[in-house]
Image (cartoon, rainbow, N blue to C red):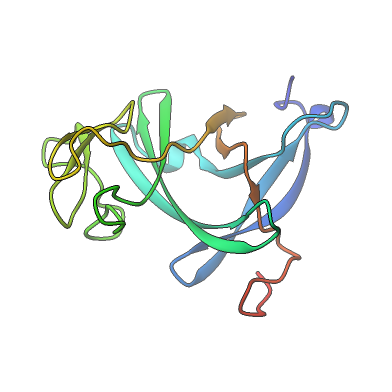
Length: 167
């Protein structure tokens, strides 16, 4: 599958929410094959290596209902890791300040509420009240320099959000 060429990729817009500000993202999909849709949420260069960034997406569940879906993406060199931004201990978001996800050493994800520490590559809690439990992984791929979310359906730009607003 070659999504890097214009002939191999169809671009259209989809909605993403960060806080209360709606932004636009690119939806990539192979024209000539029945493949899963992937959603480019940012360029690789938007997240510096050894840093993390949070996104609040609108996910469409199997029953057709939409709901906010907070995710965190960590970049480590040319690798990316994605997790639902929700501590398994009590369900709070990990970042204590916007986009502050890493521990003081910058080598683990950290819950800002209770200090639980999670391995970057596995999401497993190695220290804190949820030791042994894991963050929920988010499937990511890199296409043409974009970090893309796969295996889910996101709200598209022309769809209406649950509160009746369009994205």
